Structures are given as structure tokens and as C-alpha cells.
Length: 380
Image (cartoon, rainbow, N blue to C red; front, top):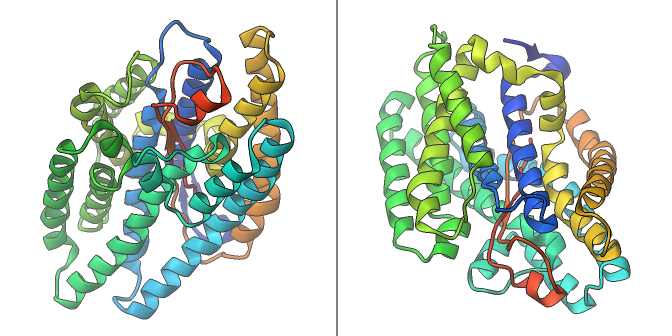
């Protein structure tokens, strides 16, 4: 397994690659859906599930290393804010301005969406059928992430003060994850997809695996065939047609993608040959920049679509790729990397968000109320 030990931390290269895979799945799905590149809407937005599992896994590891005190919890929350806020504010200020100037977005709508984004309430408003402007749709997943960031460390502090060790915590976390998924099934489709109920169970599933790994410090051989099969399943989900606001998403995609991601993460932890394929340099590079990529790909997609109507969808797709690459690079270099460079002792988490969407945008008002999801990664 290839690891990056720069800046005083250890990074699992395969996990960075997995994050890159998830980000590319989401971006490609949105391009296919909004630009009409395929005759059907693909399920690549399931990359957000991969983000959630990975985020839960990484954050749980960080939290177990903290002291079980409220002071440590406050430090953790502050570090999360410092890590994630710069790129988010860049999106709100710069992206919002571009949408007003070149994207035919009313100022009032952009301001409202920006407020949802910075207060981490996008998912709650979105589930209540009050969607933000298109630039801020991916921030719904941040609502889910922040619910986990606030609640999981507090729960862990309480458990550890009562003498609960990792071995005893594993069945408790696993049972809670299953219960949250079950509770989510009772929600409407939009609520299941957007709210921190079933999605919180997905994050907790990742935390369960991370906690279990703490009880097995030395990785043993994990069958690469199982990891390969899980990767193939994730690839199939990316290509399958489907709709996130459906029973198929509830009963098949979310649990299936969650379990497959857990299997892949287990292979990454053990460093087997199948997982090492994720450590390819291109995937790792995308994974390290997944947060900015997730935040910026949809506003760029909207701006290209609005300003190039009548142009071939494939030419539009090329413009989107070029524009998104530039926006991602600028956001990462000027808003993310400075924070990472000044936090040598802090490990990062990574992960995602989404957006409810229909196959193609037609008018501004229709797009703003689209019934579909988009995904984002809250990288760390």
C-alpha cells in the first residue's frame, strides 16, 4: 500500500483514489443528466454514498484519537470549520456573483441559497421543497456531514466516559446504523435521499468499520477477489440507469453501495492488490481535490449550459470539463491548500453532497425546482 507521510501525517493512497472515483462518478452523472449525453439518467450520483461511508470511517478514527472531553470536541469542530469553510465561502461569494452576472439568477435567489449553504441547512430546506439556487445544490450533503460532525464526537465522549471501548462500541454503532436506515425508509423519497437519517446511518456504518479496525491493529490478508467484486459493483451502479427518489434507491442502491464501499475500505486498510489499483496517480490527484471539485462542478455546468445553448452537448461537455478543472484548481490552491499546509498534525476527512435533478435543464425556474440529486465530497 502506498502512503503519503508528508506534513507529519499518514494518508492511505487507495482511500484518496476511492474518493477520486466517487467524485468522478458524481460529476459524470450530472453532465450526462443535464447535457443529455446519455439516453437515460445514470446512477453515478451514488458516489455521494461512497463519500459518506469514507467520511464516517475517517472521522471516527480522528475522534477515537481525541481525549473524551468537551474541550477536545470544540477543538474538533473548530478544525472542521477551518478546513471546510474557505472553499465553501469561495463558492458562495464567487460562484454566486458569477450566477448573477452570467447565469441569469436573481439576486434574491442567490442570497437565499448562499445563506442556506453557510448555515449548513440546505438539506432541510431542500427536503421541504425550498431548493437553493443551482450553484449551492451540492451543499445539501454538507448538512448531513455536519450533523455527523456535531453528534458523533459528542456521543463518543459520552460512551468513553462510561467506559465503552472500541470492541464494545462496534455492535452499538452497527445497530444504530441499521436503525437509522430503517427509520429512513418511513420518510418520503426526498427526505430519505436528503435528510440526515438514513444518510447518517451510512456515515455511522463507516464509523463502525473504523472502530472495528481499531480492535485489529495489524491488518491481515483480505481476499482481493472480494475487493474486486465490490469495486465492480460500484462501477455497475455508476453506469446503471435509475432515479434517486425511488424505492430502488432506498432498497438497493443505498444499502448495496454502502456495503460495497465498506468492503473496498476493508481492502484499502489491508492494502491488498485490488485496493492498490485505486492508488493510481490520476485518481489520487482527483481525490485530494474532491471537495473543491464537488462544490464547483455544478455551477460551472449551469454557466456553460446557459451561455452555450444550441451548441452540441459534447462540445458543452468539453467546456464543462475545462471550466471545472480550472475552478477546482483555483479553489484548491488558494482556499484549501493553505489551510492544509498550516495543519501538519491534523488528519483530514473527506466527503460529499448531492443535488436533485431531472435529465435536462429547460428553464431556470424548472431547474431550480428539479426533483433529483447531485453529490459533493467534503474532502479532508
